[in-house]
Image (cartoon, rainbow, N blue to C red; front, side):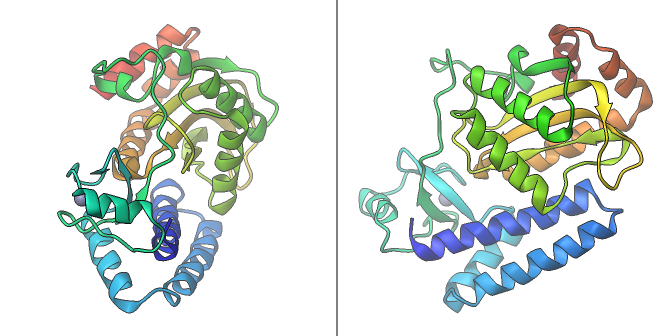
Amino acid sequence: MNKYVNMLLQIQELETVVKEGGIMSPARARGDKASMELRNDISGFKQNIPFDIVSSFERILSRYGVAVCPMIDSRCTGCSMKLPIGLANNVLSDKNCVACPNCGRYLFPDDEHLARPGDEGKQYKGVARFSSLDLMLPKLKASSKEDAIRQIAAKTAESGFVENAETFADALLKREGLVSTTMEKGIAFPHARGVKACGLTLAVATLAKPVPENGFEEPLRVMFVSAVPIYSSVFYLELVSKLANYFANKVNMDKLLNAKTDQDIWKMMVMIGR
Ligand SMILES: [Zn+2]
């Protein structure tokens, strides 16, 4: 990957973490301090990139929410345009900082995309686009947040949605370390970008016994765990808002906590995904 594109990608990741912090843990002072540190990191990166590249990046980021995205099969994943061969080759070589001629997003060669298991051009609808019955995990027995994350990552890899359980778990824990994704009501949204996965992936787990969570009175009871491809970042944030709103309602939350089988959770997810 081109060195400037690599730095822009890291800035984009940090900007997204700051944005998510505002959505996921708005009421916490710790979040504010962490956000300040992230802002300092972002300024540091920007000083090492030519001004015209940074200003174009900032313009596109504020317009679309994503300003750096992978090229898959010579297509820009931001706008789906097929790139001319010469330009696609430039993206593959590290020398150039290439922007899509259609949408202006900066491009890098994709090595994260994984084919979905059993997927032969199948068209999935609703929540089935990014999840499956295998990833509904009622009454998971976990001793801590980390233990739950590792178990859920293992299930996600077993189902073939991500390539490697350990890499996925480590990325989830690293992201939690920047700004926790726990919200009120004992719900957390651990997620990781940049892991080899077959598109956006969502696993849903309820915990058999709630586990304590730092900085919160209420223990953790529900976890939505995701692998998030860069081109799904904006959709992912919408999904998080939707899930958080739905489960802020006590009736819905109780129904989820009382779910005994994967089918029980799946039915709820299908309703929300519509
Ligand atoms: Zn494009």
